[in-house]
Length: 224
Image: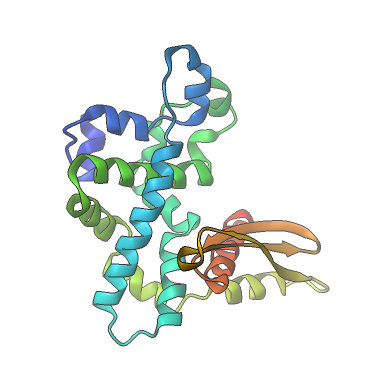
């Protein structure tokens, strides 16, 4: 735990919060009698903290960037593929508490599990120390100047289109998969399919942001 805190650059006052953030649902299910909670609720909170901090940061450091472009860059910075990279840098997979079955099936290296755990860790830092240490962690691990500069030129939808067009007769389609939340704070869902098979899904504050997130996940699944 201490070594992992050193990698995070943050020392928890409440160690149980960090332990909760590192507990996958498979472990919680296998230890249900002990009442051990999974990190899913923390993941939910961490997603919102990450989105807020990223939006605030982009607003401050990219004054010439229009709203539409900021939306796309934010989607790219916080997508599953990006968070998976953060998890790898932290060796987060090694720190997770995971059920035996999930571990046997390669869960410690699974993109979705690791990305979700990053969001859970962000929430744990926020609950333990407030917004300032959470913001420092996000800015260090997710929002480096190099990362933002790289994402300025990245368009996951275009990248995905170029990838699938390497073969003839490929049909790529995006579909609105619903929405949630009140009118002033809606979250849109999008799915992207290749030849009728869903290869990616994502969410965002706009439909375009959701499509970018879906394309980002599709690229990860296709091994890009």
